[in-house]
Image (cartoon, rainbow, N blue to C red; front, side):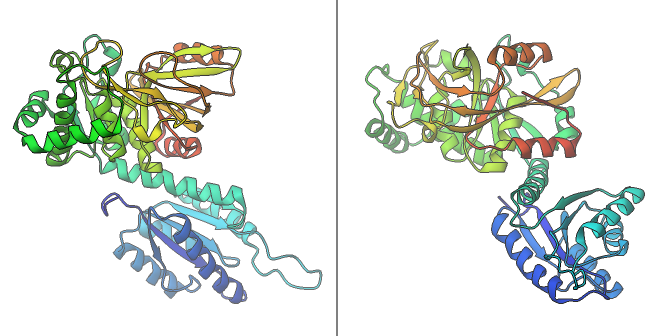
Length: 450
């Protein structure tokens, strides 16, 4: 992630001067090291000193200003008055996470060494009065709940910053009669900060035609050595390799971080429907959503920023009420790295229209997060669901993941229809539901969680 998108996270330990300094110094070293180790996606800006005196608070605020800190974590080394948190939020105008570790074990005849919980409660009430943006975390770094909350909050802020510096390229508009793939560019920019530009499909076709023969032939040879393509019609692999190289070039030359493509009917008419190409590009870190669905792509963008993993934009086509499984299927656009090695992954013609290349296979088992941003009645909601992809072969042409969910599957589809959630979803093989929910809380986006 480049510097413009990377979150600058300030870290400071505080205490009031009348408290012993040994515990604050210990926590300052240990908690800054923990943050650096567990949040490698951010740039950690450590305060040069512990926040204790008025002079120290002023100096730390200046350091954070110079480093363009976006968010700060204040760990209670020991009891801290309202002055530190209030001063930082007023001077820096950024959100603050107040982190109170558990107390040093109590001894009957010994003094308190931190009193962090009391201090955090007091400071939070003061910040509430001041109208500052703050979050609280209670528990030591070894506590799974505290660690998860810190990671989730920071990941949410990191994702929001990255999306505000994201360029999304439209390669064409949307397929015929897919009204749900229409989008509101102004609403997207106001809500997420994502910038949208457009490149006509003709530009892509022209780049395909201009590629050096040696390049696309070399890619064809690579694909022939890697996949079974016994039934692929003549000319389809050539179009596949040309399109794969051309989309890489167009995305780079246009400066697009992500894209969506109008993958039919024009591309199909030229026998270059791009399903398998999109899957390969996803493994290269070039994420292009299919069928021009910008709102589904917004979920893919967020999931990719949170995990660095390829995602799968898909339909949901079937349910098994007995096993409580939902079938997520698409024409063949999943990244090969997501394939289940227990079953063949084939390179074939498009499974429906027969006008391009697609992967046919089953996707790997594991935890998944299913998400989609939905423009419903002129504002965004997030559809969100956890699941477990099971070890199961495909049972029709194309690519699929069969996902077991907790809620009864019939209730799920009835709720989807009732809420007006469109038909595309983005799946990522990781549990980032909490992070997505936290991100939506910061953006004021309601969550439809099933």
